[in-house]
Amino acid sequence: MENARPAFDRILLKLSGEALMGEMDYGIDPVYIRRIAGEVKAVSDAGVEVAMVIGGGNIFRGAGLAEAGMDRVTGDHMGMLATVINCLSMQDALENHGAYCRVMSALPINSVCEDYIRRRAVRHLEKGRIVLFAAGTGNPFFTTDSAASLRAVEIGADIMIKGTKVDGIYDKDPMKHDDAVRYQTVSFDEAIAKKLGVMDQTAIVMCSDNNLPVKVFNMNEDGDLMRLIMGEDIGTTVRRTA
Image 1 (cartoon, one colour):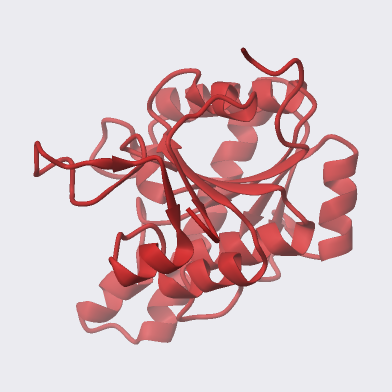
Image 2 (cartoon, rainbow, N blue to C red):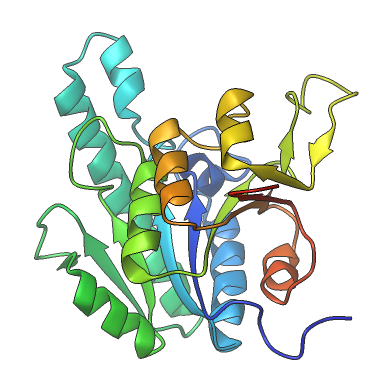
């Protein structure tokens, strides 16, 4: 039986930059981002305080640029700016759905978005605004998964929800192996020991140390985000003890 009210008061939703590509090979698919924005708006309308972190891999990925010979710090800064572009795109899509939202950047870009200040971010959430955290942590060598974990802890989120292209965490790549088995729950220690690829180790340790559960689910399934928010057992839960 579904809960009468959402199972969470405040969430952080983490999306990869690649998620915004939809069926495209590069950039942002307007149709896909509108659909995601509609689902996020519905969750906000249900009374849940929503923060988001979006990667930049659909435009630039710092580590990939470094592998191609670019200075890693320069590449990571380019990747951070890519996340700002994605957050501004999501802000536009959310506002087209009638949502109130703010983009807050870890890098000062005052002409297009606010600087990230934790107390201000929490105040935005308390007022029912959707908050988009851009530019990672503002530091090179940290992934957007680490940024999402950090921001989720800072704002006191009940859970970090990671939207992916598969319906949870598997013991091996389900896109390549038909016999892959999906975990219903898994511990942070097990995720690290088995190298399950949930997030990078910095992000996992951050969540584990602060007892912040993580839910991994398929963002491509219409309505699954709301069902998850309402307490249905969607995807895989990562927590201290499985």
